[in-house]
Length: 255
Length: 273
Image (cartoon, rainbow over all chains, first blue to last red; front, side, top):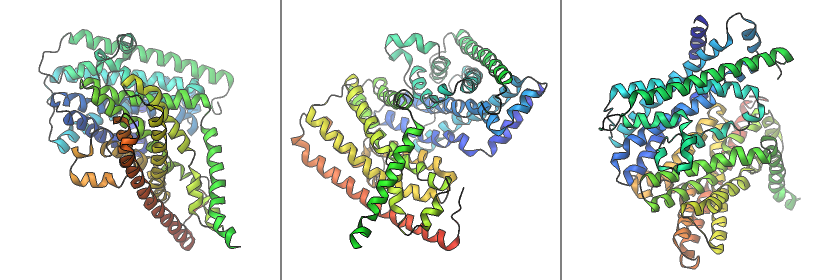
């Protein structure tokens, strides 16, 4: 637990001085204006919750992809991976703490998005079901951190995958139904979409912003949490494999 | 002697362009460009075009599709904002400043690799992905669209050089400038909604961006069954785009030479950032 807290504190301090890492928080309000301009121009004020929610989810995913995904690689480039591996605490706990700090900060995107809608268009999107919204947000942050831990390990294990890091954004925004619900996509995409926690999160968060009662809240939260837990478990297994390989081959600093 | 001096900028641009092209293939392999880079761009176009499906409007699907496919030409030209700074990062800027020739041609050639890739990205989106979103082209229209994309690319590249010159003096801002500039372009240049949606002053800013006029030309081509009926409108828009691009180019050359002058006087151009 101490290692987790240490990782969290270290990353939080680091992020205060790493402006580039949080670049997407600068463009998230602009993205809100873009999406709102489309729905407002079409006269669909009922879709404002979609346009406000999507940029926040995009910010969450993008920061996980480019900041959390880079954590282990950054430790290696700093030359701090060797002492981290040599210390008696579990490296997984430290990395998880770091990822949690990044994920927590990326939630600022939600506040930015709501504020941008109000400041530019005078649109206030009410959170009609605050309990469902808060629960969905916490579950989403947990699942995002779990998914980020997979990315972080995969990017270290495979250089070739890292070359495709950039391409892991918009395909997941489509699959995850971030703006356009999965139900409106071709049927063959749905099984793929349902394996991505974002699709469950986006649907549930949107439902919590509309007047109709939120149906099946607990099972839907359960799916998000299960996908997040699967992410953490896979991430830890991959991280162990990566560290074992680096130890065995003696390539920690140069691999 | 005189002809050689006059030709010097073109020679520098050619050498610099060769350097740029070599950079391109260090950054990408054909596979990583196609499956890593182009595939992301295409899914970005799909993401925004699908909003038209959400709005239950085939017209908006087409509008959003064309806008987002074309904007990649401008985005790729704008990558030069970041790549312009590579000369400073690599420590070659002081040598270029010390050379007895103007600095601006170096930067004109330095990032040209993004023009053919931008043309290819936008073309693949418009012509390969287009039919799936109700956007089809006849051959003469397609050729005119390719010419319009080239105009957008060149004129936006000129505009990007100004931003590149500015971030040369503040390198830590390069990613921020690129991201904010391209997102604002998406917002105000008629990519997502018509210009008339925004207040007049926003429209005035958008009109200083060549993309706005180039995109209007491509939309005119898309709405017409043939090139001839809209040829006048298309040519006029493209000439305006080129004219604005030329103004940006002059501003970029002045800024770059001024930067070199200030650097020489103050000794502030370091060998490595």
